[in-house]
Image 1 (cartoon, rainbow, N blue to C red):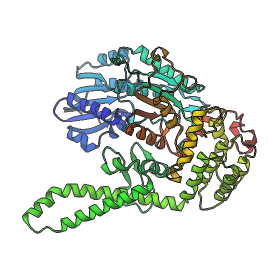
Image 2: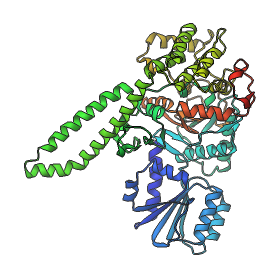
Image 3: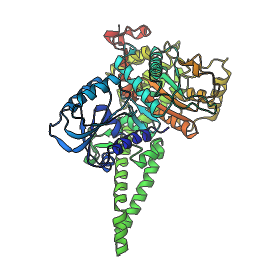
Image 4: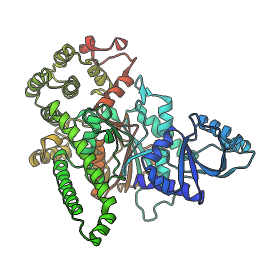
Length: 574
């Protein structure tokens, strides 16, 4: 279950089916991102694809009849119309058309009618309608999927299409479970089930003959765990996203001073960068020592290259030079990124802030934590955004506490010019009235299993105060694989597939409202332990994009659960 190799196989298929010779590839905005996250431009050049054009942007009318054209687009109404216009007046010798998802027959008929010159050689569906971030992580690039705490219609349709494509590319026909009480999760699960039923011939994969349980699609809601996206991260990939913001595996450093010109935009893909692939889940301390080892190895090779005395030395130098040049680029690139992370961590006093964030996420010590928050959020060295996250975590943790002082903390945020309205919006979005499950381990004495689990956790202690939090998703998945009863919390839509008591072998998780790199790390650890899990989300959040999503989702609704914070609310929520 490797998402990136799946997309690569599809692209290889497109390039080989069009035969030898020079080719152009015609894409739309989304398929451009899908391809660029799996293949570099030089990879495409090796497959004789020399030109990249967008179907939906202004193009020249020059006829290039010596080129074949591969078309890879999403089957949207707009794209079908643009392609129809192209086929009425073809610029290239032959067209090989691939849609990234299921296309209605009526659209195929319409395109056939437009192809009067009979230049189309191939029309196929390839199920690559999602962005592969890591081998076990995909995104649909929907930054905001809700308004008035309900699905945006386009986001709902796009999510259904994206998940359907994931299931088809992995050849899975799963039991679909959704988070009980979440209308958004239920609606999406229902749409996916209807699509699978409608396209039953596509989903007619050989069922497991050995009596193994069918795979599982688990539709979750971000509103159950608002804590994970708010926490500062300390593993390499998550930390880069939190502090510098990764978009489509690209890192834009153009607005950072002191970054060399060649490193203003970097590609961070585990598939195209071996060092990054090996270290994306390593924590901040380990990265420092690993880059030091890489640096020492680089210096050793640089010294070897200075000793060019004989013909054999020259030959060795010429042969190993491309490797040396590549290594030099890798060292410089990652030193540049680590330098930026280190500078920001020190400037924003993140070690102290993060330690308190983790304590609040994992332990209930109200009075001690309140004093530490007051001290930190009044400290000018702590940025207003970091102070706001501390108050947000406090508000979520102690929402029902008798001595909860969220209003007092918001007053300090307001005096510093911070966006105090974020906190009431967050409580409306994901307060205790919404959440299911056990976010803060408020265990009832009757629940013996969880009580024992927490005691063991407490006795073990923590390896690292900055990484003691584990996302709710990890506990949910552990319950799934241990074969625990899922029904009251996660009912199944297609219950005829459920009589199996064995746990599923393969699980696809989709989080409405966005996944995080901390959750991707939890999935990576489970996969290393021999399980098979794929994680996806409407987007991949860091704390800033999550706050934007919360504000967008709650804009225009009347706030009912934050009366005590009414003076900090936005005017359209009162």
